[in-house]
Image 1 (tube, rainbow, N blue to C red):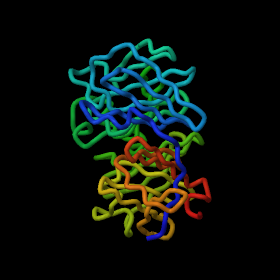
Image 2: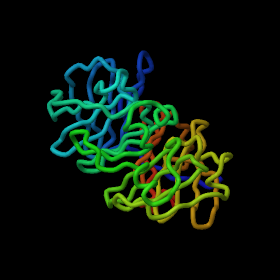
Image 3: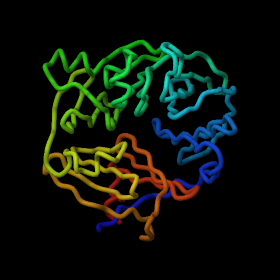
Image 4: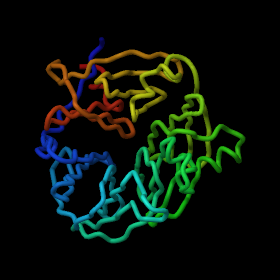
Amino acid sequence: MEPLYCTSWGQVKELKRVEGLLPRIGVSAQELLVFVPLEQKLVRVSEAKEERVPLEPLHREIHFVQTLPDQRYLLVSAFSGNEGEPNAFVYDREGNRLHSFSVGDGVEDVQTVGGRIWIGYTEDGINGEHPLSQQGLVCLDQEGHLLFSYRQAAQRQGLPEIWDCYAFNAFPSGETWVYYYADHLMARLDGFQIQQFWKGGPVLNWRSPLNRAGGFVLRNRQLLFATPRREVYRASLGQSSLERLKPVDREGKEIRFDRYWTRDSRLFFMQGADVYLADLNSRRSLNR
């Protein structure tokens, strides 16, 4: 296997904890966010510094954490409970809860780009009763108002709807990429228009390891993703190629990661409390 060289992002001591609920991780802008449920605090990690923010207690299980403009934070539970019950919570920079709203049931992933909130849904959510979840993939404003529905756009353009949103990646440029079922499609959105589709080959089929990835990073039609089996792959949509890589540190030592997170061109690995980064925008990741 070819090596995938990763840069150390240092250590986050809260990631070592194993008792109780696991810390929830999010990648937003240039930060790694760690929500520690047992302590009700948020750890913001960048290459330059770490900051710990105690939060006003919230008696809900949180699955996703992201940033919003004006140094605010968004915490989301994957489940809405009763219809209309809030499961998205906005906090200010001091950790005070500002407001909340419902974002549907069966949430697969949450990503923010500026003031826009992108949310993808699982098969259970899409087949459920919440009108947001039924859209497959949505974009909301900071108050939870609907800006974009994939189902509505697909119906308008005569394209396949989402039955299960496996993974998506929202870029600051306005592009959003989504991998979904029906028929294992990869779609590129520009703004709120569906522009391109890919399907088939070794990358986009029911046997592909991409089905289990839960996230991918992308640059120039090149994909990079990891799986729960601790396997890392590089794929090309243009050439329909797929190859396995071995993540290593700058000295060539293998990184046996426990968890991973994806965003835009960046793939983060966690090994104990150590955090490593592979970035498709960096030549150093594929060349020593």
